[in-house]
Image 1 (tube, one colour):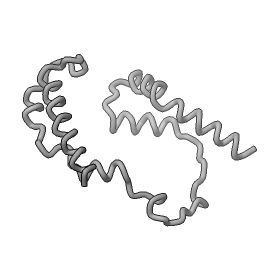
Image 2: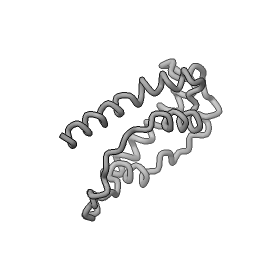
Image 3: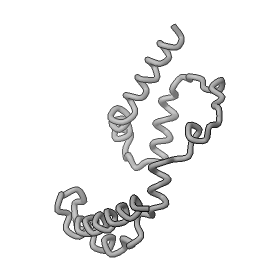
Length: 122
């Protein structure tokens, strides 16, 4: 329980720092102050329970359930479909903007996937 008490004390200070940053944009990350948003930061944000779930997520490794890895299959990447989905679901703007984000954000994963295919099919 001391851990929760320490966490709650830290969060109290963190919330004050967050509100201060939202009010002043001292680090110039927001392009303008966010006074209305600062006023809406709840004294219970973030939830300690939610933080514990993030710090100790329940997943197949923590539940002891054996994984069926037979379903894990490397597939070819459908670049066209990824770009279409990015256009629909992300605010990456124009086709050129989507292509730039693709190169900046997704390309390394696509290359890594190709390397895995070479490794596991050789």
